[in-house]
Image (cartoon, rainbow, N blue to C red):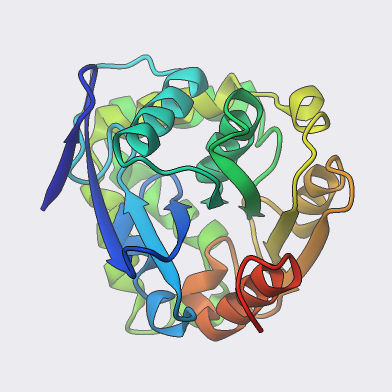
Length: 264
């Protein structure tokens, strides 16, 4: 187990691949931990230094008492990358992880040379929706939200599969204060104007059955960035790398090769 003591917080992280490889940071969604990316790993190309981490309030990282802000989540990630001496990485952020990617790319352009905004947006939902979900979680626990969350996350076919309990249990195992803190951070985030200022290679990925960040929302956000690309993963919901890992990996690999980050 690798724990980075960053002074203000301790974050759990894991590194796979080549020590001298292209650093690729994977930042996961609300209500998951770094294991979320495991279905994708066997399909990724050689030559990568793969860094995954649990954001505050999730997995094996510290769980401060809320409230959290998106600025704190961005600063946590910034401190982790500095701790690991990472520069010029490719940042793959999914859902809230994609919001962190947008904020970090604006704050520290030296850290990110290219980014993938997966199933995310400059603004996700409304403050009222997130306030309602946070209140329900506080009063009844995450079990009150798990069924509706699985419906937004996965296609109907996947929800009938024997793989679903793993992700359902991962959501339920999320520390309540961590989930609420991050949900409230999402509620207060609007990156439309700042994301439009970015100038770097960027890829937007959406799932055609995503009930949390529909394809049009992802496309609207990625098109804020000049010369960006958009890819649709069919037969997948909010976590397309789980339902369609090979298609997701091929999309990511193609982006890296097109931008001369990996050889063909």
